[in-house]
Length: 283
Image (cartoon, rainbow, N blue to C red; front, side):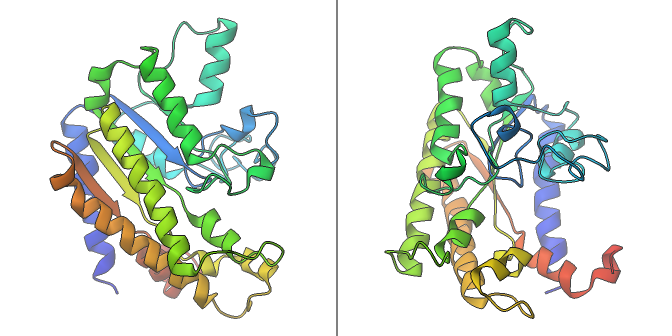
């Protein structure tokens, strides 16, 4: 297991290091709470919010809509390649509409929405923005020439989503109609459609992040799952989904000429952190 950590990190770091060397001009981000920079905060109809303490306490020193006490993975990547942090799409949209800014940012935009999934119906009662609508928001900007097509070729596209879909599969009050395998395949079909559309819109450097061990999150207790160990059935679905994502990335080079894809292997890294926290400054 130890060998997986350096390999995964080296793969991602080499991708972003090469991106930095080749003058990355923008980052466009899609996904859920792992990446959300505040879109839900600017959506007055959304009930999935992070606009209270301790969110934002350790870096920004106030809530920003990020579902973390500090920065997100995207924030760190942006700093690594020398870009200012990207604005949430809905914040930029409000600023353009009220005239406080002339046009949309040129360093990229964050479309991620906490609580959303790759399946359109996931957590829609919270009024989150599903992946399909995030993609439509991006396409609207390109169609209306708010984003320079040449910029897209020098941009990074980051994707992470699926944990909410898998968690919801086990909700006791909404039993699934699909088998676990069929459900995962439906999720992967949506991700494949996403990659196909962003490529056709101009994306060439795409990073697909896997899910962590969702079956180990404390919220599993809400499902009646054991609290003294991880939820094996849930993690089995996560692993199947991650394998599908890995296969999708491996097929990019042949399916999408000129595209460079990278798979962010998160699952094993998180499990290593959990197994030996003292090695990584925790515990």
